[in-house]
Image (cartoon, rainbow, N blue to C red; front, side, top):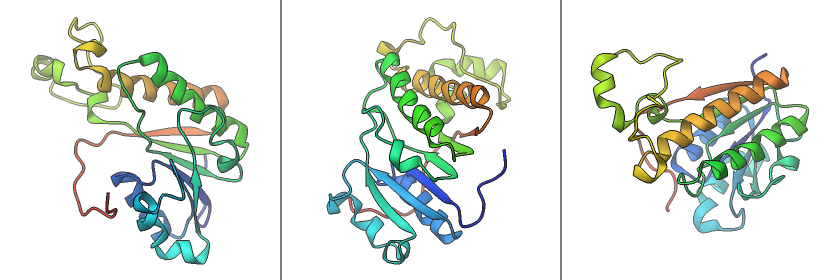
Length: 203
């Protein structure tokens, strides 16, 4: 797929979060228009720092209320966007059916937009190597793009603390499969190992 054109419009889910806020900031710095998706666009305690960004006053940044748990919540927001940066967290990783359902909410809105050609999904190093696989890391110390945690490990169960890792793997695959099926947009996954840096928001 073609990269998002300079000056294009990017929707950012989870914009009020630590990573989301920085993604919004960086996109504005690079000259993009941004639609920041937050749970409540009127909650200034949570989104005031976004409204303080220079792009908000100029109209390049707009804020939109969206509840990730509600199907269709991104339909109108994604229309006209060329890209989506998906950084929202689900409320729990204990239920894989719920995680898949939330992924489908985002994917369906991307498909309905008819304009989005790239989706960047924030995953985690936990989707590559989970804490239950430390011995596996000794046997296979190289981390590569197609590597996933050992899904046959009997410890790999959501009720044994592995829900986060399992959910991130599920999400990666859901977006990759949907992008391939669509043929119109591609999915890029980022797997950060840690988050460091100054905090933009007050909460």
